Length: 445
Ligand code: NDP
Ligand code: 2IT
Image 1 (spheres, rainbow, N blue to C red):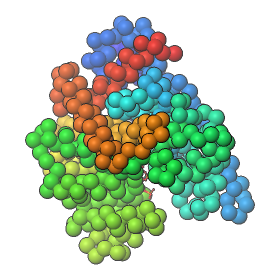
Image 2: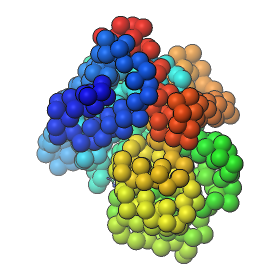
Image 3: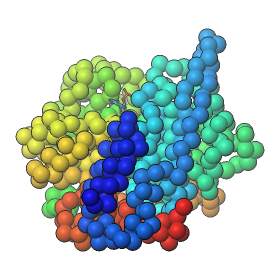
Image 4: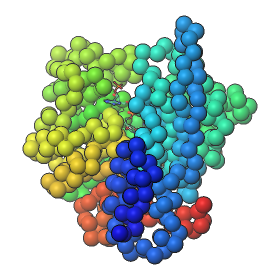
């Protein structure tokens, strides 16, 4: 049995119930075959792959909090410090009832390669809780965030581990958590969290960075294949931070985005999504998507899922993991879709990914396509260290350069190993090679 298969079997044995984690490891390792085969003896001697699939540290803790009636609830908090070879652990916090160890570990594992791809000095981590923010009052969110940070504060800091937002964690939650961090530490360490508000050390452009970065990457991908975004029909899933700013940038680049979705239903708007209305519904009113349809005559709201049944040129899954299934991939191909770029983390199942690739659809994985968010977080850390704030133009220019370089590097890595056009392999190889060298150079523990 080859080294990769041995490690995949080990991961399955050691983590029998962690299907998302197993899926993420399989996706990465199976595309590394040519690199591993070339360096097998050296990597085996270092137990490199065994180290790479084992987090340096897993922190789990109790998060008790009080609701508005005075009843106490208990959730589980997590922080996975997966790999610190390239820099301080870096990655978001997710608050969603589906959160468990498997989902945390898959996200942290992906983050190691994503952060490596950005070219910035950031290791990989992720955290969060199975807390459900839906239907909670502002005071309840505050109490939860304070309790969560009261424990997390022991493990994070500007030079150790730097959390940020993810599903269910945006500017409000980061503000509440940073306030608690500062109170307990008794010091102003802005670089301990990113995604902060603009009045207290946040970076201009961070809110938009994942969605905008996704479109900068998509533009490069299309350009390399002699296509352009202008005039294209785009379908987007999700209606949160990533989706909103992906829609905004795609529209600014001359495409027409005709869908978005949340966990209850989806919108088909043949006139093109009105992004200002969507922001009002989601960011200001925190309402469901039926409120969008109620205010927009051209839009239809449908319960359940269905975004991928709409004819499009480009599909951008921006909601959550495993939301684009094999049957969805078949519909996309049958409808003539030419490119799929992942705004979310692992939104496309392995079967759907293979089907899209085999059908000639240009496919860019999330660890490259959505890296603009964490890259801008890296820029926020730089600004905090310098005690300076850069202009939005400066940040956006750096973000564009980073996304262009990510595409160049993954395109080149795929070509170097005789897999031109396989952007999954290209992203994994480019992310892996840097991480592997950093670990070996440090005789990484
Ligand atoms: P948000 O919480 O802002 O938005 C998430 C969106 O996806 C909401 O519309 C939500 O609907 C929907 N959604 C979430 N879970 C489900 C589910 N199980 N089924 C159906 N719909 C769902 O999160 P983000 O936009 O920040 O994150 C979206 C994705 O992008 C995630 O995969 C995240 O890991 C990834 N990502 C985020 C980055 C960032 O900077 N924020 C950076 C890189 C990747 P509802 O509100 O109804 O739950
Ligand atoms: O998945 C991700 O890259 C994020 N949620 C952003 C992480 C970050 O540290 O900005």
